[in-house]
Image (cartoon, rainbow, N blue to C red; front, top):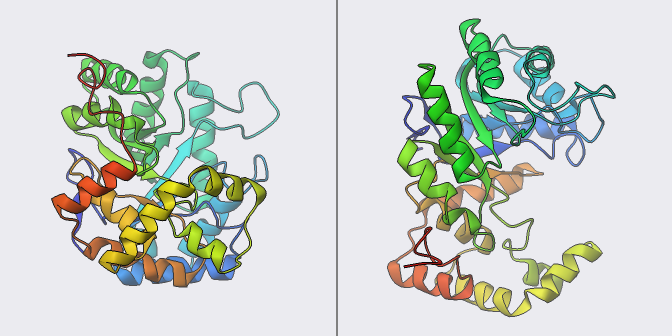
Length: 323
């Protein structure tokens, strides 16, 4: 496994991140344990979760599953970089969400209990909070870092200017600030190329793409439909809307002898700003299959053909829309 630095930090993480959102709602606890064991066996040392995962408000079902896996011992906690998130609604009260110092503190303590650990390696703000001043947010995060409960702070779903603004204020406080940004990024969703990716490159943030397969669209959706695999009505509608692109894409993948899912992840990994796409396997078999992506080399000709199928926003801002 060729480990990479998490942005400008000295922390080494695997080029694939194990996303745990399916643990609980889609994948049973024993199967979730098996996936985490297999990931560790493959050398994947970067695990991502969130306090809101699990579909039962306020319970943190997925964090609990990860915590019980860690509690088995055998060095599990010391062998992974553990990331979770704060922002989402975790209760019925007016302060049970967002990024007030009050909620950040309580949410962190609750995540630590569920995860059965004394620290979170990467604590990510799940969304921007337009109601809370950055002085309050950074003060709360600094306190958690001083207490050893959090090591690094990251963001998710931030705009480029918000990343720059936040880190400018963190620098004024002599605080490390954001070290990573978790964004929606895949062949079919390339808006972040305008300003988020350039901001992360300039400021030394790791980019952690979520939904690298566009919700399954880039995972061989047409082939699966032809094989009669069940899909939701929404998924079928998306396939029909994108049929021409998907036909070209899956034909291209067949031509180069690779699975569509692996090509989609390999396309992300070829970008030097991207550190670790977040995979969301529901089974051990899906996890095993995903490792092929780190071995694929896409040539300039391949990349040009993929750009033609899935055009991006036209480059970085402002050249994408101005001279």
